[in-house]
Image 1 (tube, rainbow, N blue to C red):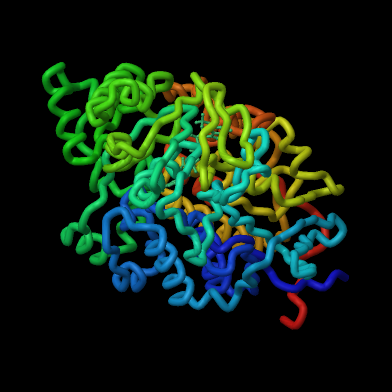
Image 2: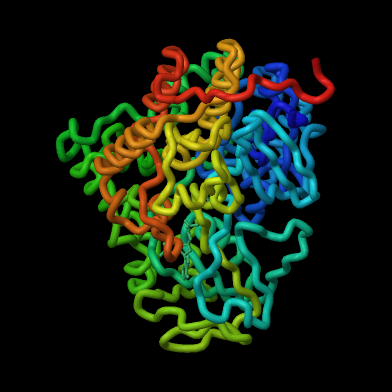
Length: 543
Ligand code: N01
């Protein structure tokens, strides 16, 4: 009989991983965690670039499973900066005493399922092979950086940095340097103003302009803090009833289309001035409302930039608001009014190649000391695909996902029993509050394990019919969102050359998603198949 090393292996120590480790111990399961970083934090460990911060409210983007944590932690700003978020995650990990369970600086190289034993073997860069009953890949949705698809990347003679793996030793000195930044998604939008504060010249290489609206940044409202601390459990339950897993504290009461023309204009201005434009209208996704909101934002963006050519090029004319992930900043657009900051519009003058002295576009060679790549991620399915996972009969996950990810409820894949994928494809994922989702998914995953134990079952996986149904549901809801299927974005894999184009986020709402998960649990997992095979095996050294 194969020796079992622990009940559960958790890969990744971000929001989902930390909670999964705690949850396993609470449920009396033995658990080990592996993390390739040197500390907890996941995405918030790696993306330590200047200006990195949460652009949704931190008090929402936080755990609620432990009331003491909610009551003890003080956020210094509504939208906290990366060091504070990582500090928070370290605080929670220590408060919940899970750091001792994690092997840091260790990459999981592969995971394989053995049909005979019904167990997973996880192999690590530390040459360990750990055998477990359940495998939780809490690897996040934005943890696999995209390789820049630009000729000559390796030939640059200056320093090159990626926002997605910014050096942590404080060694990056951009003062007085000529810096080129490639990419104007959320990371670019956040780092460009801070780079411009120190660099002598900044060249921003923009392929696609993005929507940029004001942030919620500012001091915490004591009333909100009181609400959160009075009854964290109630907040937690309320979050699960919302569309995005965010507290409705900042969502306005308006349905845009219910208002007359004057009312719409007034509500849009109110939302803009209150920094709530992203959450102001319940029907922002309906085409007529979306078109008007998009146009309003374009005008507000345009008027912040003094040079007309630059203003025209910084405004996203090619996609509707929400078609790509919108960005938030109070300083990004104004940065282009500074004399040493220049926008290079790549649709007109594309990058031809990178050379030792800088970047060559179709119009000129731009000499640079430093290149910053804010070029994004092989998102959502990428982190799972980067692991070498094989399921029943040695079938590889990458083969099963060759035409795009398939799974049921975003958490399990047919043919890969007892393998759980929080924050992966076809869950509300990046279009919900990832912290709320992490708690909900980890709860569902551990309730699934408990159900198996209580029913004297050892393993399950979703049926292929359930997967087909869920793929259809994901597509059905995506079709309702303006621009979701037609805009090139990392939501649908279009940012990575050769990646199959498939919309990877479930947009039916966090609340609906949660209800479907609860339905499976309450009804004995009708969408899954139980697998015969060896009964549950005890962990070596345990009774
Ligand atoms: O990555 P992105 P990101 N030549 O993929 C451009 C989250 N996040 O790291 O749009 C030239 O959005 C690319 O151009 P295009 C958030 O969910 C959250 O900025 O593909 N340009 C784009 O402009 C976010 O959405 C926070 O045409 C190239 C940029 O690089 C997600 O992370 C903060 C190129 C990549 O933008 C990813 O954001 C930061 C090339 N070859 C991030 N390749 C919070 O505040 C790519 N680009 C919570």
